[in-house]
Image (cartoon, rainbow, N blue to C red; front, top):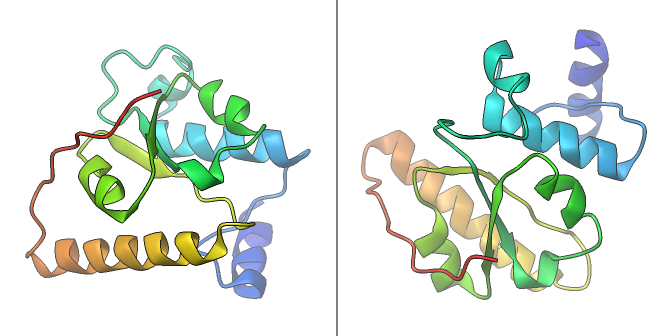
Length: 138
């Protein structure tokens, strides 16, 4: 498995790769990994995320689709955002994952990716501050 993940990452330019039995399974696995990390005690508690330090997933409105159910099946709270300002406000300490769908909203998705990359660079440089979120929860 380790070699497959590494090779998929090389082929796609992603941080890591995973083979799953389909899109929904892949999204559920990815979401579980984001909320539980490598902690086996947390993995067995899913979908009961009480006490987990990160239990929220941010999804831009244009990325909502039928596969949201796979993400929600892990027990996370969905924070839907409509624009970059809401997106930045939603990125709080409880966010485990940002779910972006590469499709019809590609320009908006690219803007949000740029925003996320900028925020990560700020955090790594020590300049990033905590942002409170006022975004609508669904």
